[in-house]
Image (tube, rainbow, N blue to C red; front, top):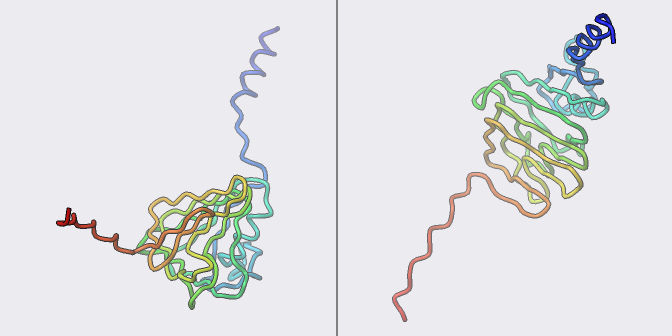
Length: 180
């Protein structure tokens, strides 16, 4: 193999390609608005639910960006279902809040087969209804969630096998019995 061919192979080996179909979606609406899913540079065309719906249609991992604000999800049946690789980034637990607008009957984030959700730098609160929770990971194949620097308050976190309530104090340890 000549020097030119070896040089070409070396250069090709150094080229990195971004994942096909990957996108960064900047949420510019704080209301539920699932129809706001264009997520372009135009104002007010990208809600949290709309961004997740759009990210589910791409082939690569997507990043949804939330600003320092309160993003309210309503009980309208349009739950953000995660079916692909999505990261939702806030700017801090005390600055980015995903909140239930009213008693919510479903999940803030519902991860299904093949879905992978990473939540970062936010607080998720108010998702307390028995049929859902703040983050629900289904028992379907390859559904997973990862939370980094996320506070979940006044909510449930559910998986197919078990559920846990956030902000619940643990039961006191049982006292030894004096009877013998």
